[in-house]
Length: 354
Image (tube, rainbow, N blue to C red; front, side, top):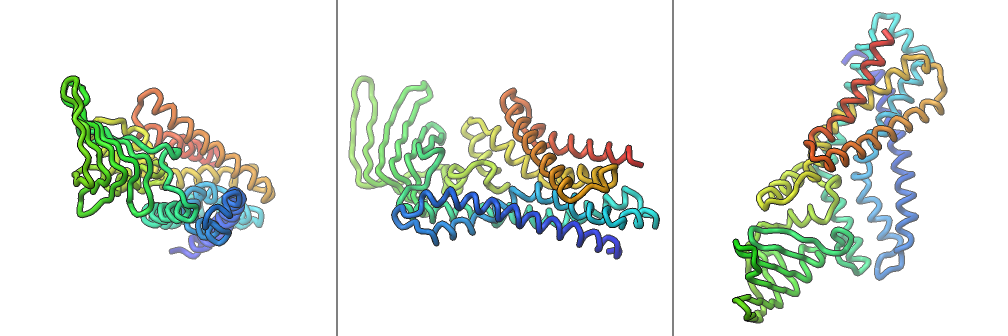
């Protein structure tokens, strides 16, 4: 690596990491204030709340990284511009393209670490944090607002009231519909555990509908095979944006095999796939403010510019995603378009500065 590349890397990486630390501390403080309302419930004390906050920080780091990278590049490169160091570099023969490429290389290295964290570290830690908090508070693991969830497995329509830590289901109802769309079986189980690739139902009541008659039997336990695995339950217990790329692919495959709508999860999957492009867009859109007329502005102004640009990207990303799902367009469009628009705007502005 060229000595100037290392110098730029150090300036941008340091500013980005400091910004990320400040954002994480602010987010952690706000989350702690919200968690204090639950402190004292069952065994959920202040130390349990701190433990929960520490476990979810990798996920928050992943969420805040684009904003931190944008603000960090503005502050880091802006400090070099204020000290006329960038002018010296350009006078030495470095073009805007060369400087932008060096900054992009910095973003690439940081992005690889963040993407790996968001894929392999953050999802299991957040899942474990939710389970620990639910256990400490004496509650079940909430799924979709605490109202349970519906799932389809072939001809069976399944409702689960709650998922307890340890992949233990409570309040299970299974409705089997025949090819004529008539209810054939209705099964209720008090609880279920996943063992050796099958679900062990306990406290089972099964009712078979034959014409106008209903035949009911009671069983202490019943073993059933189902495509709904603990991995699927982990997906159901979290928002799509909180899941890893691998979990999203598993659940999308499950939804499509059962003829269910998977567009929301496809949008989340493509957003994860295009995350490096979004990080690159954050860096490129910041460069015109460093090399342009605003290069002599202070750190406060650069910080404001970074926050406004980050907010604009977040709103565009959110709105376009919902518009795409509403009008039935490909989720690929909603996931990639905000990054491409910011990237295009950044390159256009840089081109005008030459």
